[in-house]
Image (cartoon, rainbow, N blue to C red; front, side, top):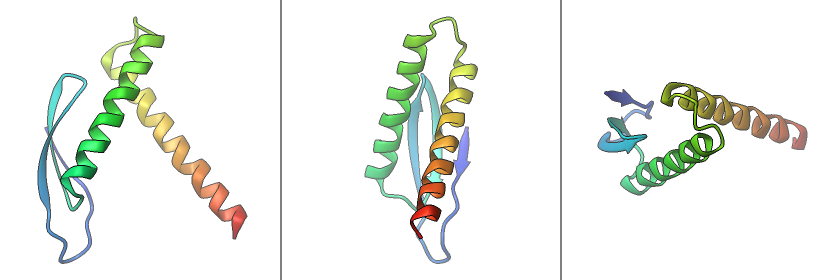
Length: 85
């Protein structure tokens, strides 16, 4: 599976093979290999934590819960930033 992230005009896109939850994905984006690796590591750690807390949960359910948590964190950060301004 291949995912393409947004990038600014003129930025060099890189291809990165990430193994997330025992599935291989090709990520295309302008981030550094170190960023892709750190993101992959954090995703796998959070997926493992979710699966440890709810072993009966399917991989798909765990991924959706992880995505929900990530979006929730972004919203909280934006609200905090808006209040600080």
